[in-house]
Length: 162
Image (cartoon, rainbow, N blue to C red; front, side, top):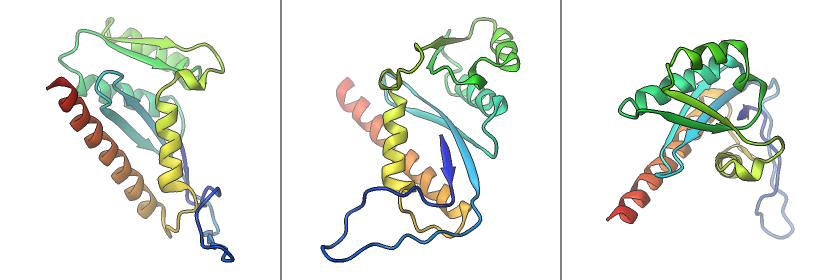
C-alpha cells in the first residue's frame, strides 16, 4: 500500500454551503506498507518501508515467520505484484524449507483479496483529506489505525471462540 504525504483527495462530510479545505504540504513524500491478515483470526502483521520493492515484501515474510514461529506452514495468499515473484523473493521462500508457501490469486481479482478492503478502510479513515504536516505524523496515524484494527480483530476472534 502506498502512503503519500500529499493527501489522497476524496469524498468527505461537510456542512451545507461550506467547502472543506485540504492543504498540501508541497513536496510529496512516500512510504509503503506490506501487510498480511490472518484469514481465521483477523490479526495483522505489517512492515513499513521507504521503497516498494522485494526487500519490503521479504521483511513482511520475516515478520510473519516470527509471528507464526509455532506454525508448521505459513500460507500467504497474495496478488501478482512483481515483488511477490522476484528472483530474490523466490530464493527467500525456497530457503524457508517449505515453512512459507505463496498462493497467487488470479490476475485482476482484488475482490478475492480480503486485505484490499482493509487498505481501502485505511485510506478512508486516515490518508484521505488528512491534515498531517509531516510523514512521521501521518505514519503515526497509520500505525494507530492498524493497531486498533488488529486489537478489534483479536477481541472479535476471542468472542467467537468463547
